[in-house]
Image (tube, rainbow, N blue to C red; front, side, top):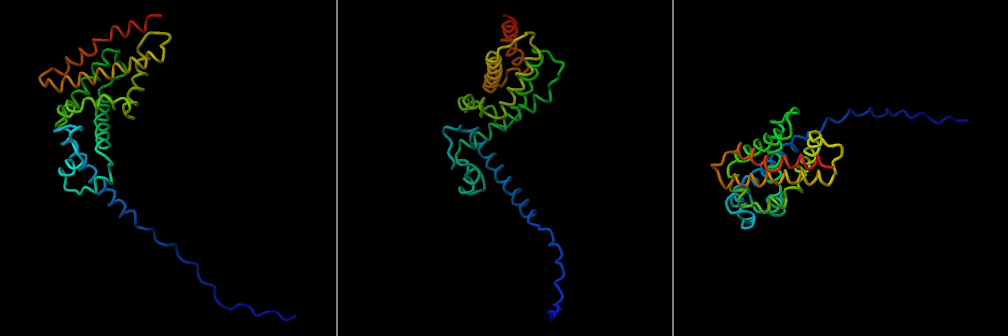
Length: 224
């Protein structure tokens, strides 16, 4: 039996691993450029909405306040309402951060609310053009406020803090939700008041807003 000749060809050596791709650098630059363009549109939209309001503003007005093209706007925001909602989320996030910085777990209900109101009022009214933004767009803010994801996080947190401070064995969920909505919207109304009355005292407004319903809130939850 004849043995077939052995294959004398030398097998190819294993290929060295391919060097890591460097596309991430290009992507990082592209992402940075994308963020810069988006922020430029947001700054322009804030200026426009603080000058003429959402109802009167157009996408063209926003684009004219930038160095960018109209086509670029639609790559980031489909409508003027979308960029308005984005700005409102940023505003709510600023208020949330201010409240987190001022809070203490040792505060009673009244102290907690006064500090939260004052901190959020002071933070938001420090933004350039904020007073006019709130005044011109108040009906849109009212309609959108509680549907914001960030606002929902804040209301959920407030529910937990109310439960921890109210001496009641059982708090009906619907009453608790209503109380939180009232507290939240009272803050908005006081903020709108301050935006229209720039010489009003922020701390006094925070105390007044809290005092309006704090005693009644505690009494209503204490009742069977």
